[in-house]
Length: 227
Image (cartoon, rainbow, N blue to C red; front, side):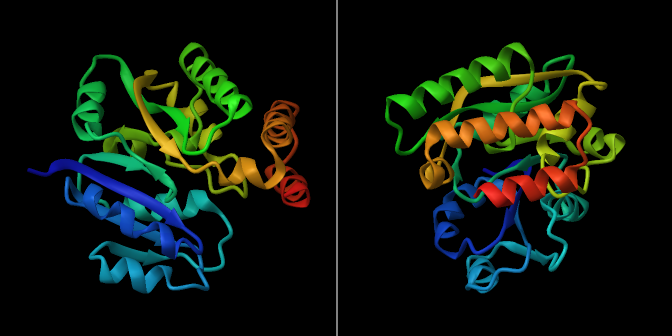
């Protein structure tokens, strides 16, 4: 039995991560891939797997990809998922139950990583505490929201970076942000590239820059220069 959920996945050169999403796609109304100009076989692979595929080439903004997917979604509930993140087995029931709770406008899962050491596990535990107390989850925790609330909010800001952070700040006007105890498992690859501590420091500098009023374009340039 499928659930009334559209899963929306932004991609860029993610060909090898798509096959693992087949089982998830069978549990929901649709799985939508919005590609940002991949040079590998991402688009062809997604089409072969039976996913709905849209392309948003040359925009350089993940928010634009996510908004395009949401505009085409047929289900009443939207779930935004990173391609290298795996949902818990009972995700659909958890999502619909959470959004049926009075006062909840947006939900997300707790975060785990697939290859954690003690440093990375500590970082993710702290991230889960922050997410619950401050009602401030990040995009790799798989946001889910009712489509009408998403549309009312204006969707993701189409900026070069921090579109997930900015969406959450907007959605707080419409209700509570709930972080579930059920956890997604995301790839450790972005922490492994620069190291967990350095990656975390850069992420925190992005947030500090946002609160100081630094333009997203400058934040994105700084982030890219450190990758």
